[in-house]
Amino acid sequence: MNILPVVARSRGLGRQIVSSVAILVLAIMMMVLLGSYVFYATLWVFYPAGLSAPDSWLPSPAEWGWIIATTLTGLAIAVWVAIRLSRRILAPLNSVATSLRQVAQGDLAARAATDDHSLGEAAQLVDDFNAMAERLQRAEQERIFWNAAIAHELRTPVTILRGRLQGLAEGIFRPEHALFASLLTQVEGLGRLIEDLRVVGLADSGHLQLQLQQTDLQQEVMTVLKACESTLLEKGFRLSLALDTQQAICDPIRIRQALLALLENALRHAIPGPLTIRTSSNDGMHELSVEDSGPGIRAVDAQIIFDAFQRGPLEPDTAPKGSGLGLAVVRAIIGAHHGTVICRRSELGGACFLMRWPA
Image (tube, rainbow, N blue to C red; front, top):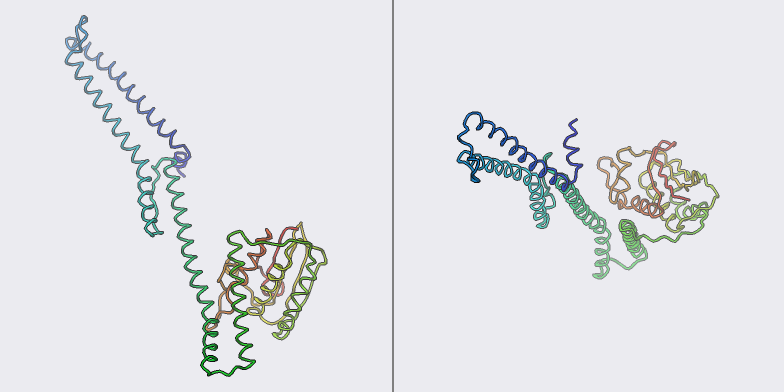
C-alpha cells in the first residue's frame, strides 16, 4: 500500500503551501549560489577577460548574460511550480463549484472529482461535498418514495369511502347498519394509518414525546391481550406467557402501542401456532418480546423490515398485508425510549421480535 497520498492528505493545506514555497525559494537560492560559483570559476579558468574590471561596478557582458539566464530560469521554475500547485488546489475547488451549480439547478446526482494529487483540505472539501450531495439525493429519493407509499396506502380506503358515500347519496345503497359499520371500519383504518405516520414522523424529527412513569409490564401486556386475544385464538394461535412482575420505567401507552403492532404483525404474517410473549430485565435493560412459530424472516430482510413501508418477501400472487408501518412504529417508540428492537430466529422456529430499553 502506498502511504504517500494518505500522508499528503493528512497535512494541512496552509502547511503544504508554505512548505512548497519554502522549497521553491531554497531551490532557486541554491541554484543561484552554486551556479554563480561554477560560473565564476569557469570564467576565471577559461575566460578571465569575461570578468568585470576590479574598478568597475558594472557587470561585464558575460555576467549580464548569467544574470539574465538565472533570472529567466528561476522565473520559469517558479511559474512551473505555481501552475502545478494551483492545479492541485483549484482543480478540486472548481469541480466543487461546478457541482454546486448543478445541485442548485436540481441535479442531485452531481459529484465533484479529485485525485491523489489534490492537496489536503481541497481533497477533503471534495469528499465532504460528495457525502453531502449523496445524503441530499438519498433524502430526495426517500421523500419521493414516502409520497408514493402514502398515496398508495390512502388510495384504497379513500376510494372505498368515496364510492359507498356516493352510493348512499345517490340512493344506490340503502342506509343499513352493516354499511355504516363498514364505513366506520374504513375510517378507523385511516385514523390508524395517520397515527402511525405521525409517530414515525415525530420520531424521525426527534419530537416524539414520552410520558415516562413506573409501569407494571405484566399488567400492560394483559391489557393489550384483552383487546386482541379473541382474534388471536380465532386465527389458531396458542398464547404462552412468560411475564416478569418487575416494574419498568417507560411510557405505558406507547409500549402498549408497540406490543399491539407486533401482535398485529404476527396475525398478518405468522403461521397459526404457538405464540409466546415474554418480559424480563437483564443487565440494566428491560425486555419485551413476541415469538411465533414460523415462517421466520431471513437475516437480510431482518435489517430492513423496520423501515417504513418495507415488507418481507411475499409468496407469488400474494397481495401485501398491512400498511408496512407497524414495525416502523415499534422502532420509533423503542428508539424514543433510547432502546433497540431486533428480529432474530425464534426457538419456536419462527421470528422473535425483541424490544430492549434502559431500566
